[in-house]
Image 1 (cartoon, helix red, strand yellow):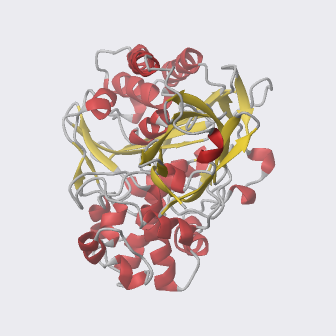
Image 2 (cartoon, one colour):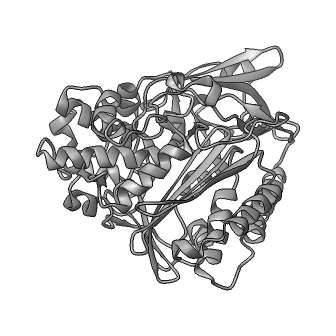
Length: 493
């Protein structure tokens, strides 16, 4: 789960500045190919635009490993969390129409919305949801591969305890962000996918942008790629959410994203028609909460001094330049969109390999090249960063493995069998299968390998949960609960 959370922290970066006449197409193509080879990514696509021109649009590699299928401007990618900018823009349009306001209490539009903290529940606004400052941590398993529809996801997320004080720190929270999208639908009485299509996708002529993968033509879909249990890179199916998710379910093409970036560079206008006011657009790109430049965040943004989150975008500096950016990560893919409002440039990088840092490294490389700055070996920098993180994980793992393996469970395995309940996550079940325990929750299930005493390790093919520990709390000869990794405590029923 560490990799998943780390991945979800990578939501920003980069800059570019040059005159269109100075753009070196061969040089950029060379840098793109070098990055693809270095990161061993099957396929990459890069878009660079100004407000009125597409300066660069080209790909390399293949849509599917083992097949010679080029990636084109019409190839469809899931853009994951880059969907968030579409929702904030949609809400900005509704603010212009005075149908809702950034600081409306969420419960004004979603009557059943609740947060577990009393004070936060009374104060939480649409703005709070859109800039991730509710105090509720990510808890990605509330939405990732969950079986619930969006209303139930939101209800469950509302039962999670605050891990940080309300409005104090950025806590990236996808489900609560989605609640803002459902609030927009409630305001208009129109499902958010139809509302989005009517107010943004159709006016911008984004004909390759879809709110659900099932709507995307199969012949244009790019394949994602992930490592299997043998560390072999293989194609993977598109992630299919149980419901349309305003925060992360859009799929689009480089051609459409070029228009999307130009829309912002033109201050909310498309072909002379204004779709959102400059005032609402300015609010979207106004810092709402500080992102502390420490730990992983500092390492990922070494050229930035100030970072903040606006409404669906990260706002930061890069060598004195202002940029707006966001990343998207989902099974088999990572994308990165960047705007340079002062210089008037937009960049998009698409990659069809899971959790790769290629979009980050390539964007930095392109930035230095286009700005004519002294080049930095960004590929090497981020590879070294990953290797260091992996080494730290191995060290932590070795420490964990210095456990007292000889300490047996307190009870016979049959005593651990039963149902365990968590207010947000619901029911988890422990079964006895032959000579071992088996943990089952939602769409995740796996063998529990004895670790030490009353602690067991989950064996699961999904790397996000594989190796997570379940520790049982026992008092007065009775099993009270089990804690599963970072999800929380499940009380035995």
